[in-house]
Image 1 (spheres, rainbow over the protein chains, first blue to last red):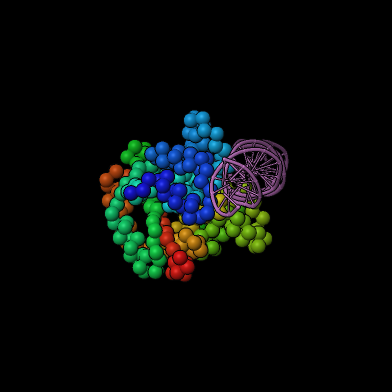
Image 2: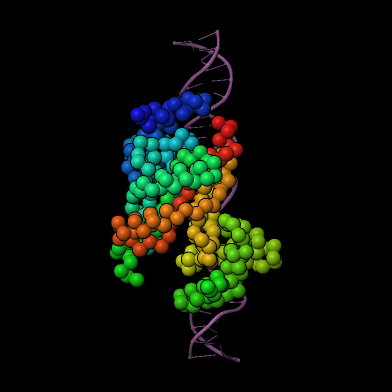
Length: 144
Length: 144
DNA sequence: GCTACTATCGCAAATCGTTCTCAATAAGGA
DNA sequence: TCCTTATTGAGAACGATTTGCGATAGTAGC
């Protein structure tokens, strides 16, 4: 299996874009965070490592990462989007507590069947899905 | 089955909030749109009807509609959230074309099983879900 | 390797959606 | 009807994201 940086380089080449150290630092940062992340977290992480990557560059790199299939939007919260890398990872879904905001990741095979069924029904070439189940977690539901 | 405005009034009363014509106009507008909507669409709709509801009021009413379970966030696009009313409607999921952006609604029973399974596994009181399947639609996939 | 072309960069200004401030208004209990 | 205070509208403020621009640096062709 190709590494994420290889996938990215191939994508950049195929698009006729330029291979730059700034873009590759962003890719590296994205895959260094093993959790959901937002633009600011990437910026802070790169800053801590004394990489002088501007926020503008991070914002400009995000669409490339989305289009290349390395990351996807995970959820919108606190006024901005949160992402997660999806390359090389088993697809997972999110379980969110509406009260305390905690997010648990889970995997459920059946969802793949839904993808397939729906793809056939509407003649779509399905490439992925996002499932968020929400409710009240153990701790929060007792206070009700 | 109670009408949406009745549900809303009950919610307002239980919360000790005040029943105002502005809030009820927003509720009416929300249920007059039989599709996904955003804040601006509500504003424009109310404007066309010569209702002078400010955007601030619409923004302040949205959280009440969410908390009362009348609407839910549908998806984030073009820099802002889009909502849909869910009261009195069968739960549905979204199928999105990544290229042309069209959104098809579909229902799939299996998803309810997933809710149940996951709720038990993590001891959650599950109240709902959002599933978005994405890919390339018939028209768009031929151009590839 | 050198050159020319131009994509990409960083910075700061601009934009856009959303929230906040505050004075005026009006809901609703006494 | 009166009084208290939640709610409103308007615009300022805010925060995230995008854009404009001059400087920098990939990369294709020599």
